[in-house]
Each structure stands twice: as C-alpha cells, then as structure tokens.
Length: 154
Length: 143
Image (tube, rainbow over all chains, first blue to last red; front, side):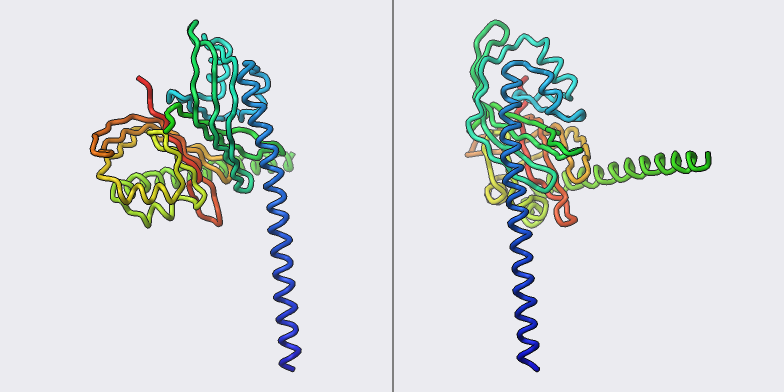
C-alpha cells in the first residue's frame, strides 16, 4: 500500500518537474525571440535617426512616448519628431556599440551605448551616450514607450 | 435601441473604470518613488531592496552604470546625501509605469561636495502583484 503511494508521489513529482521545465523552456524561447526582435528594432531606430526618417520613427514610437535627450530635455513624441525635422542638427553616423535586453513579460528594457557623429549649428560634434529604452508589447507589436540617454559616461 | 444604450453605458463605465485604475496605479508608483527618496536619504537598505528588482539597471547622474547590488552597497557607504524631487509625473501602460521628474542632489563624494540637477526616468513593472523598479537613469541638466 505504502509502495503504491510512494510510486504515485514519485510520478506526480516527476510530472510537476517535467511541466515546470517545459514552461520554463517555452518562456526562455519566447524571451529569446523578443530579444532578437528588439535588437533589430533598435537597429532600425538608430538608422531612422541617422537618416532623420520620421515616418519610421512614427511607427517605432508609441503615441504617448516620453523621451529624455542627452542634455536632459524632456520631449513628447510630437516635439521629438518636429525637432528632428527642423532642428539645426544633422547626425551623420549613429553606431550602437553594445546593447543588452531584459524582458519582463510584455515589457522590455534595452540598455546600451551609442556613438554619434554629425553637424550641429554648422559645427561637427562627436558624443558617446548611454541609453535605456523601454518597450511595451501593444496590439501585437513592440513599441518604444520611453527613451532616455546621457552623454555623461564614467 | 435598449441594446445600444446598454452598450454605450457599458463602454463609458469600462473607460471610466480603466482611467480610475490607471490613476490609482500612478499614485501608488509616485508613493513608491517618495519612499525611494526617503529610504536613500535614511540609507534604509531593506526598503530599497524591496523597491528594486533584482535585475535592475541604474545609471547614476555621474554616468556610472550600476546593478542593484552596486546601488545598495553605494547607498550603505555613501556620506549624507540630500535628494529633493522637484517634479514627478507617472504614466501607466497596463503592467508598466514610466515616471519622469526633476531632482536636485547635494552631497559629498570622494571628499568633494557636489550639487547636481538632473532629469530622471524610471521604469516600474508589476511582478507577482508587486511593483518593482527595473531601470532608472538620471541625466544631468545642461544649463
């Protein structure tokens, strides 16, 4: 009798372990896919910024996105895109140097450094910035809901 | 006609309930932000430990990239710091809340006084029914 109970407990325990590992591996696979997606979206974002492609940025940024520029200026999406169109700033090259992605269900953060060169007010500039972007999965797609950067690196 | 009225009432109620819940979440997060400021000044490591996610990424106003462990050990060893939050706004998106604000930091580092204004952006995530901060960056304000 006790041997039968022990067998049942053992089978139940094995089943719980298998179910947990399947769930964990499913989660890991999903997170790995999200990481790939977000890394390509980040590349797209930097290319769009480099070419001042506001149409692509329109799709990447959520309507309520909040953006903190490297000098601490806070902008909403509309201000950010308008400034990119009319501002006397021409980024020529923006290279993300490393990025790391952390996924929390339907939210993810991307942390990294980019190197930017360009012309601002007729003068060349070069800055390295650390950034954190927050992405949310909304209506079947990942959108950037917040972005912050600092040119102070230590 | 009755069905249309009932549907309209349902839609209005759902929208009102959703907004009320967002406001409640935002107030909760702003309270956690205040707690964070107080805990940092009082060097209450236990409180900070419960506020920060284990995988939190923190970028200090001086540009240092820090983990949760770094922030806690820095808070333990740092000399007195005065943190004045000058403004703070929260925006909620389902299970994530973004907080932006201005802060004024005054203290001593490596024997030298510092006085810095910065804009911060924090990301909070709901994990196991508990709000935790997963990232925080403070950008120095250029005058």
